[in-house]
Length: 448
Image (cartoon, rainbow, N blue to C red; front, side, top):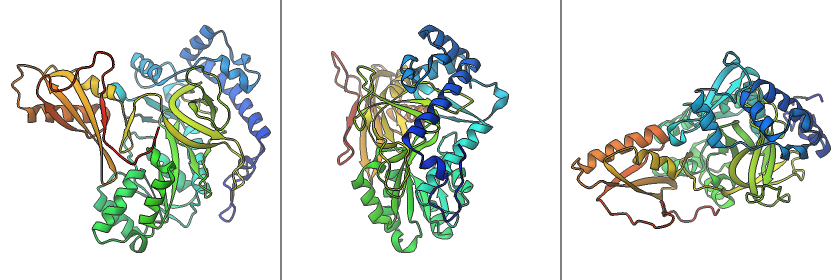
């Protein structure tokens, strides 16, 4: 299939690809998947052993339905394999000399999971980012301000997709809000990418400083990711009323690449990277596919990533999809929403945080009893977390010193700047069955 790149006046980045029929999409995915399984089996010792154990080979796949015969992989397996072989591990299907870039997750259990890219992987990723940006209306005449973290975060290089389509790009990163507002004002940026809560907070901060975002700033497109709010109409409307700009929700995954899906100008679901990532939406209890449009666990299989294939990766996200063509004319699957998580993960200012992350840190410190609680609150539309941890009987270290030590350790391990309150011994309730570790005091948020 020949892919035709669009010119500046055309509607699509890759017209032939983006508007092909569902039959053509399925044929393309099958051809890519068959080739990809051969690559994974040949290059990765772990996948060879995994396939052998399950009694399957790349040749076992004759149709997309046959993928159900292949074994799952999950985040815990990624951590275990990486701990066994640091950096790339035996999941990698290429030698290290072929890897040109690595991103990393925020570091659950203190060990960030690495996502490697070959030059081909990286170029394909940026081309898809450009495709998404184009579908959202970004054009070469735009001035795009990228205000996501650049430190190992897979969202950092997404700015290169905007550069690829020809936009003037401002690599702002995570600077203080006053500095970011000054950048937006000085360069009159027309587009920005951040988290939903920070877009809200930044708009209100501007107003407090006497800046009217609608009048004094030129931002007319706001790309958001990292939190569920971007897909919630009420949240988008509040942000848009502050800025006089349209909000476009994007969905990314650190284990594959930055944005796997994003909203076009219709903003009716998120167009999926269907030529790069095959989706399954499964009933978590039975492992069987759910009907289209119904909610289930998102399971992903890479189709082109050379450095580290992921075959049937269980994300833990509860999602729904549609394959109905969009009003924009694109025919790729659309993610209708991330409705919740299978686990109890929190998202604090775009960073994933599990109570088990905190438990691992608290219980490594002998001055604490090991009992803890997370208090989640929302101030100025930004989520924050306070860790309440009990000191042990007989510990005479000043509570302020204990709190400062635990704060530093939590930040180093999880990447979250949590406040810490040190409690007296026996302050927290004990549970005989399942402890309640999270006290969520937020209101008016999304439902799961």
